[in-house]
Image (cartoon, rainbow, N blue to C red; front, top):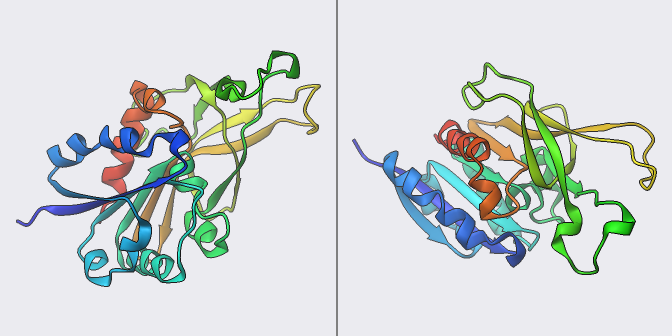
Length: 230
């Protein structure tokens, strides 16, 4: 039986350490029978032959841009059955200028609220690190089986989304006197999406390799990769 093929596409903003982060999961994919190919440019999506034989795309490309041809290749591959998966800004904050990409993924990073203004240090990434709870909302899904609610200390993503996603876990942003919103806001933290014949998996935790090595986050991501694959 031929091995399944996984394509890792990484790049974009260096602050999310796309190389170190994706390297964490290559041994897992290999151990689960995937031949893994790594590309540092999303232009590989425009190669129809490569995409046709790809069973899973793991993308870690924060912000950046995507050409019309590359996006069309990605979209068509997913519709045909290629799985598409990722975490944090590498999938939920990619290609902000492409509305069709945002529709494909079903959720888009909007912000990550910060600490109290008196606690901020100019230029410190930790300004946006908060302790928050990931609440499991679909404990019966195979990705979440046996995982209870858990806490993280990292960026807490506020996500704009539609109701075609299947939410597996959420996080709630509380009301603070120094923020302008007036009631708690709940955002999806883990979701899946069916698009054509393809499956999409997104986890919003994953700002750094350290977050990805949290046992709960790592288990969710690994299961999500397998769930999404053709």
